[in-house]
Image 1 (cartoon, rainbow, N blue to C red):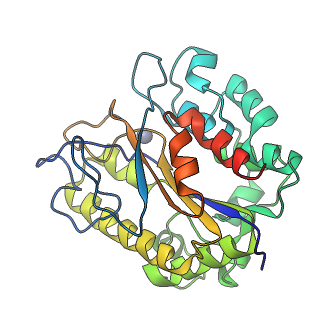
Image 2 (cartoon, rainbow, N blue to C red):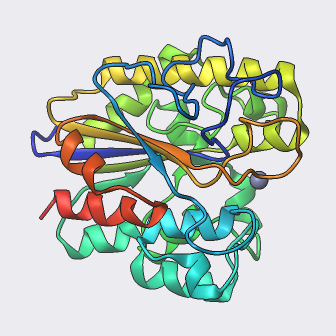
Length: 294
Ligand SMILES: [Zn+2]
């Protein structure tokens, strides 16, 4: 356990700031603090500061995952660097940016340790590593960090991208289901043991593309509860918790595509004003975190 300042970065794929209406699963849902709407004061939760964050980054077209996540994880405006919003997995140009400037690398160079990626990877990933991987996976590899495993998850030292473990159980992994509270206990423990912890969640983007209202509401309600449980467990005197997204999607199920909306960045705990005050676009996330440790 360290008492030095620390950061937990909670990345949620495909969560934008939309408008209320029957197309938005966040409307009339018990989903504070994720339920943020355009032109409305957000409902406060534990003094969190909500910053409307530009995900379009001055480049035409719909924001996409590979370039958006690269931007969040490096502080480099990746769509501007490659000239367009890149879908799915990073290509060679984005990988170069990640290899040189990932947040894990920048923090390591600044002497910030220990740092970790909280997500568990299954043995399938280690046995047949895919040719193209997510920006986060690339960032972890670029910094020479270890991936957490299902064995770590069984020992309450890792958390799956589906924090309930239900997807793992469906795939035949021998793990037990977790409640939102149980999952939050694990992530809060990891955050207390590290100076920088990243957690990645992307089911929001999947249900957004599926345009499944019932499932989206179920997922978002659970996710909001998970975030609240987490914030109640994390030592906010020491830790800054930053929640952000790469682009909008789930807040408008009338379209299968990502949206052009800004995304919510929510900052809780220590130094929240300092961090929130620096954030205008996705490119400001990494620099604001690195500056916190200087
Ligand atoms: Zn998507």
